Amino acid sequence: EPMMLLLAPWSAEPGAPITGVGTVMYLLVLSGLNACLLNIANFMVTSYTSPVTLQVLGNVKSCLSIGVSVAIFRNSLTFEQAVGVGTCLLGVWLYNQKEPKASAVAAAPRTGSGTWLPLGLLRTGSDPRQ
Image (cartoon, rainbow, N blue to C red; front, side):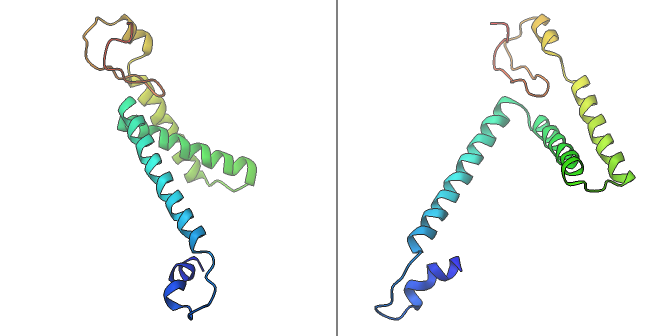
């Protein structure tokens, strides 16, 4: 149906009323603008964290989606799926244990270089104690 609205000016008989083209074009432009802003936001978040941190957060989001699906919609969860979710969450926990803690970064000597912090914290280009 939306494609027909776009093609209507070329396929309609002369003098036939054409409706919906403006609405479809508005929605296409709005969708493109939304996609552009989403990409800009994604690049900004990546610049403040790391790509690995974003991937780990994506895995946490998947685990939360599965949990919400089971809790709200009463979807079944097989043993293999539960082991997969548990393994994913164990990996997130291990990742957080491997990353330097904010208190350890604050106690570290000043280097002036960028510092990578665990999930949810920002990567700064200078000393975080300043």
